[in-house]
Length: 427
View 1 (cartoon, rainbow, N blue to C red):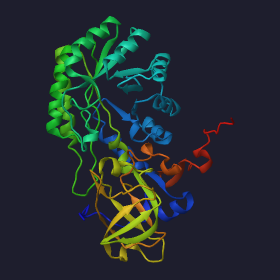
View 2 (view 1 turned 60 degrees about the vertical axis):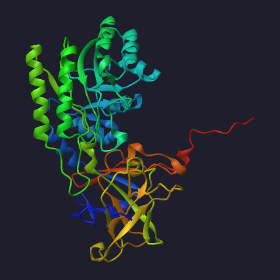
View 3 (view 1 turned 90 degrees about the horizontal axis):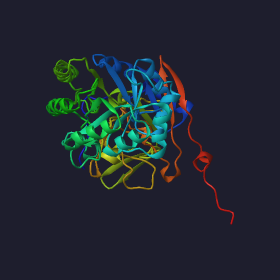
View 4 (view 1 turned 90 degrees about the vertical axis):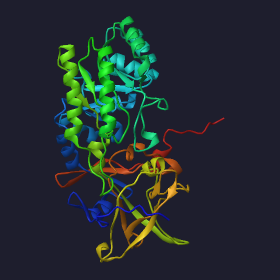
């Protein structure tokens, strides 16, 4: 069986942001998401060259995380009615320059259309029908158009958001007709957004910038903002590295400056990070509940599954892992072995060590005992937010570590809350 080895990573972890892993598990239970606030602040600082940082909250939408990014100057992107309400609960205003909240979607459901009209929330339209629906309800508004340039990119086919196999955005050939459509309702296109998926590299980025220039020349009458989208990668393996942010910014800045000169007005340059801000901050702590042999394979079975962290089963995503011993001996002194890490769900796919396509792999971890803690690292993005109650498993608790002190930011769901909204007919 192939190994998902990540060289030079520590396989032992006793603390998170100087807080004992063992104490976190004892105090808050497992499975448990823990977020270290300091990496979030560092990643925000990394992007200060951009005029606006708009947090894609779908990556990690706990109110405490939202409050942190808001207090450190980030705007916010919302992709649903619920995310708009989360932004409001976290202290975001609805109107401002630039817009504090932008609703980005490919459709309006009835509730979202009512809400953006009522609260005057800026909309990033991802389909011609959205332009019509908003124009009929709220003519005279300013809008952004999300354009699908006809090509895409992603670390997985499921994260590719461009090209003719993607549902996202307005097809680039339809832009002229959409601009006419917007004019019919006196909707002013003040922003353009092009996002082709996760794992952006500079070759693809240059193509995006060229496409943005073409679109801006068509839609530039009222244009004041360009959005570079998101998808900024973070290294999950030790041999991986961050994107060259200076080069990334310079490409977009040069595009913005050329267009500003042509249009005769300054243009705001936005970036829309989600994973980049929060992935490294997050850890999923689980307890090892069984160690067993299955033929040539050793399995560590833990009390967290894909109901807590779905990225491995959805994308074949790799996460570094480590062990915290709860016994008297340190895991440092134990021999490493290749193991398969799985969860408690009644599903063969409930495996944290797998490649895309569902191929089970191994990772090296120290020998472990029942009750030891396994830590899934870089789990702050698309972790809890993609959680479910599959197998009637309660949602995990969440903790934020700020200045060396752990704060419970979401209580663990209890079993009664699992079916609180259900009822049995009496007749």
